[in-house]
Image (cartoon, rainbow, N blue to C red; front, side, top):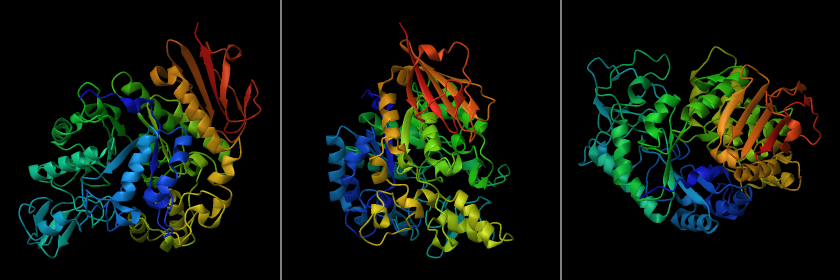
Length: 551
């Protein structure tokens, strides 16, 4: 089947279901709440939805520890609610993609329960290693969340590998029966009408033979041997050939620590196995490798990441564009300014929405939700955050360690969506499952709906404009003044149109710098973040989009 590449013209909205909207009053976001808000998502100009996991799960990693791949968790409304949402999405001309998490399962999955008891054919569904006489672990690999990557299972009497939480054992993808299970999962949801998948840490599914010690990576030991492993392209090609090519669907791969050169091995449109890739480079303009190693925000680093992916994928593959998701703190608190909240939120939107690729918006991004700052570390829920606080920098005073969580924890992206200034931010009529950010009365959807100049309505205008412009969909990209740490300036150009995007990331007025050949007096100013503009000066966090129509 020939793919229509419909995803290239779309804007996606990511939903983290348990914090989006509670539809039945039990305090947990659910699919009934999503059904209630489909028209809101459509009103943004978004025509696709990505669901973070909604499968049955014990919740050790907020749903990324899956206990059943072919069902919907009762707390989200079960399969009945899911099918109503899927129908509602399609009735509105929208698409829906699911989170595919097959590097690991929950340790409460039926497969693991049988594997630990050596019940065939599940004995080798996971990666097991016997205990060594000297008591040492099978190798020196680290997990991404909780210490070392090996845990002794008392039932089987052997160690199992888990690259993430202890309750997330890694599947043995080298076992053809496991790969068949994955293909059955894909087919199950595609037959139901789902339009594609976001594939969680999919580049980790093939481990190096023998699982040798890692003598290269100083942190996340083992990544050298399991990221882009020896059979990764073979297995992804198998999934594509045997299932995905038979449907008009698309796939989006999450790929930590990946370069454009490596990405093209996966997403090159001539021979790739995946349609788009989530890269992490644009998320490291204020940290080293991980949010837990923060540095001062560098606009130059952000621009370098954006431009590198634009240039190197041009004509070969398609970019996935994003500022936020469920795995990172809020972007205004990181790359923008809470003091210049609306202004910096608008400028961040402009900075990425007019690049070439498919934009994704994470719930709450469109109203500028900010980082959460709880009074106690005990208030955090996320397994990675809890482990980090209790095991890292123990010589630092608790107050300093807590402040680092304010900057770094993914729980800042997981507080309930702020719908109104009513109790619990309008998220639920019950007791919310998690803490609501204290600033919900100042930052919420209802307040911004009625304000023409709000961040929410700016997102709507920017998305509508993006979709109307030939140059954004088809045009070339070029960055200017790349050494500036205050301005991000780039152009988009097609046969019919020329755009210039000017973004100030300064909290002070800045001189408007224009590349040679761009006469703004012959252009239309088609989008601006500030009501009053100066021909020579940009106000703090001011951005503009200029258009030249070619004759």
